[in-house]
Length: 237
Image (cartoon, rainbow, N blue to C red; front, side, top):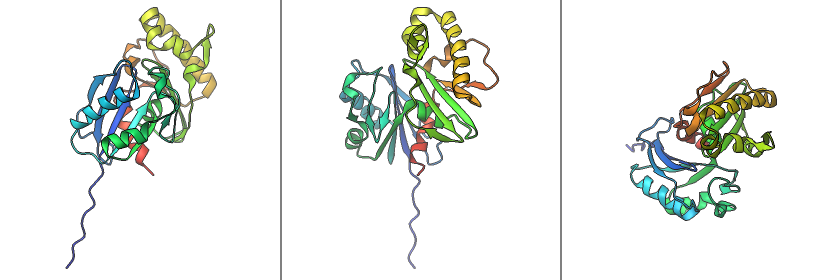
């Protein structure tokens, strides 16, 4: 009697490319971590070949995986990176999905890093906005769990002829100091509420730990690891 071979659950290598660090982790088919997060500083200059080499090196320490999800800090269409304000201009028009797939020998899907962080944080109910506070300022909007594609609030004017990223990015934090930066964040939260009328705002990214203000009831901070855990969503066809 012939036996049916049991299908093996797919493992996903999730990659989070940031302005200061590149992180990886392997998830099971349900999105649970099966390896410890690994991180290396983002190569400088952060050109595609150098970042790809860093990802390949990290991947070798993660064991077996079947597919790859990548969060990238910029606009992404069909695996091609179209903006890269906090990395290097060489990324503009670069087919990251194809290049990384060739390097790792696995299928690769790529999305904006804030979108992936959002998938790892949202409840799937109502209007949910996600912002990431890191080297830059990331944003993602979801309506009943569905992503509104290519939202890029970072470079929209916020206050004093400066954008959200210019007022709240890492350079602004270093220059203004944590106290003033937190005051700016308070104003940004209010402005975003008026603009998007969100039910919930999630704040993530490496600098979320710098927040020391009282947040409104519908504003929550999320751990930075959400930028990896959300990667499983790219394979939910």
